[in-house]
Amino acid sequence: MKKYLYVFFAFLACLFVSQNVHASSPSYDVLYYGGTLTLDTWDDATYEEELVYYFKDSYRGQYVSLGTAGNMPQGFAIEIPPKVEVEGRDLQREPEITNLGDGYRVKIYNSGVATDTVKIKVTWKLKNLLYSHKDILQLNWKPITDGDQKVDEVQFRVIPKFAPANAQSELYIHTAFMGPDVTVKKEDGIYSATFYNLGKGKAVELYGYWLKSDLTTLYDSGRNTGLTKLDEFHKNQAKIEQEKYWTRMFWNWILPAFIIALWLLALLGRNRFKKMIWPGVTYPTNTRLYEIPQDIAPLIMSSVVYSAELDEASPTNKEKATPPVFTFEKMLQATLLDLMDRGVIVYEQQGNEVVLTRKSHGHVDDFERSFMNMAFGDQVSCPVNRLFENYEFSDDVYKHAKKADQDAIRSLGSKAQARFDTAVNQVARDVHRKVEDLHLPSYYRPLEANEEAQARRSLFFGWAAWFIALGAEIFAIFGMGWFSVPCLIGILILWFMPVRFNGVFKACLRDGVVNLAGAEQRYYWDSFGRMLKEIAHLNDAELQSLVLWNRLLVYAALYGVADQVTKVMKLRNIHLENQALNAFVYTPFYHDVTHSSHAMSTYGSTASTASHFTVSSGSGGGFSGGGGGGGFGAF
Image (tube, rainbow, N blue to C red; front, side, top):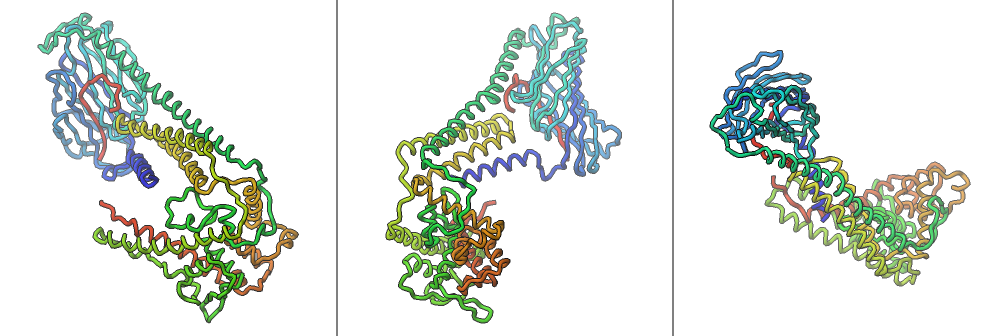
């Protein structure tokens, strides 16, 4: 499930990047778009487009298009060629005009370099742009539908030369439900409007009428539909405004409020669950403990106190409920040092090579024997750099592999992972048996039914909030052409909480919840671990109170701070009787041990990767239904 979610988020991120990246096009901004529509007569019109580009790369030219698609009046036509002008420049060649089938595109060959500001003007002659009805002349036209970039500032002017200034008329400019608001001004019968931040690929529609009875010159071109449309115009405009209002209300207020309400219910449910499983006492989180709470094997302690198991921390375990308290590598390091400290594994320097030898001891537990079998294989002695070599698996197996090798690589990976998991799981099982034999008090209790129900309710509300937000974002992108970066960030935030809490809940189902005795033990071990992590900042008196540095070193490896402890030991010239641990502090043996445990972890993750190896195969609403179309860009 998580894999598919990560792929989806990667897709959304790519979608965001693709809003602004086009490998074959120069980078540029459109600072200004000006459209002036002059209605010379009922049948003849002139449309003048003015664009100002700012280029960030070198470029070859610009293009402007005007369309005939969709619902257009009978006989609508664009006269070719249009007039093309570039301010302050002579054209390098004649503009190239292409018939697109539903319009025309003009390519203007006008090359330059980065930081150029270019102003172009294209003037089109149009025929039969207005609908002629029985009572009104109606304008229902989209001059922009396919802009290649966002436009910083947009201006429109509509000049009806055939109509007196006092003629009854109205004009509206639509920019989709979620587009910028546009206020249209009328002065002496001429309409004008200015608005900002028209999104890439967003449409603009001019929607208006002139009452025929107020026109001084009546003219019948033979295109009269004979229909009365004034009331329908007003109803349609009122419908658009109402739909725009409720669409914005839904997307901006109702839906976010509903999602936030679900999220708050999830948050309150999570907090209630945490309160229900609280052991009843809160310990301070800034204390230090200067002696080991209980001198037991690292794997036993991590299992009993933290319910952290070697198999659960394994690199092949892709379903970790929560990040492991102790990493797989640190558990291996600590166990190796523990066995060396107790003389079960003996250190010997043979020339330039360090050799470790396992000794037969009656007091070696089964889990320790299983661990040494994993580390040494069937050997008694082994160079430290060859520990765990039975599980070695290199990524060379699948590097530069072809699709034909896929099945063979998966088979090799699966066998290597099975061998790895068998050894790790055997150690974990033996640890469990040892814990049972020790009859240690239980530090966890099972999750109660009402606690589980509370957690599931919280997860339900959390996932519901996320799924609704995700569905809304998908619909907004593909249904309305509206992409919002803040919404995407919000979806990621909504996703994070249920995912994180789901891990906590799964861990509680698997291990139970910490009881009062467990909370006390955790407090002691947390305080001890905090002391190890802060050992570099201890004063002289605190350092002098520390004893059994060999055991401190073992647990420092488990807590991931062995480097800090060894540094303090070197500064204080603290030496250990145990040859292996002393070498760990003062010789490169430290790096040998950390390398061997890291190598074992890498073998597991590499085998797991190979077992799953795959070669990869290479308008938004708010309009009245007008046709036309137009765009702009650069090349």
